[in-house]
Length: 169
Image 1 (tube, rainbow, N blue to C red):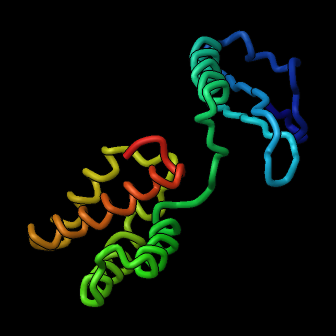
Image 2: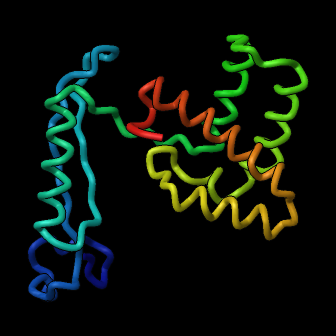
């Protein structure tokens, strides 16, 4: 909370007793980053209640303890797709030149400029893909084209899981 002068009030805010005022956060230590040698920290805020923050903190702590913790990334789906396609082309993986051309068209014309393309990769949900399909249909894209665009996205997200950039596809 901030006062009239813009400075933080900390515990002096008169509205802290109201349940709908403010939000909760958690912070945990996630060990040391092997590449930089610096301490990794996990912080997340915006929870409506203390119990919600504790539950999310416990889930994050389990991931850290089991070794499944991935540092948060600010990369969007669009940025990931633009990194992914050249890697996919270089790896070969049975990708013909014409297929790579169509992938590039779908990524540049449909996926990157969409709302989904601006979504952070780690915040991506299946509902976002449903919204993308609805947007494509509303824009007049044919059923076959929509299926192919979704197939490109599925392939990229599968690789994101394999690269430990996502927990699940």
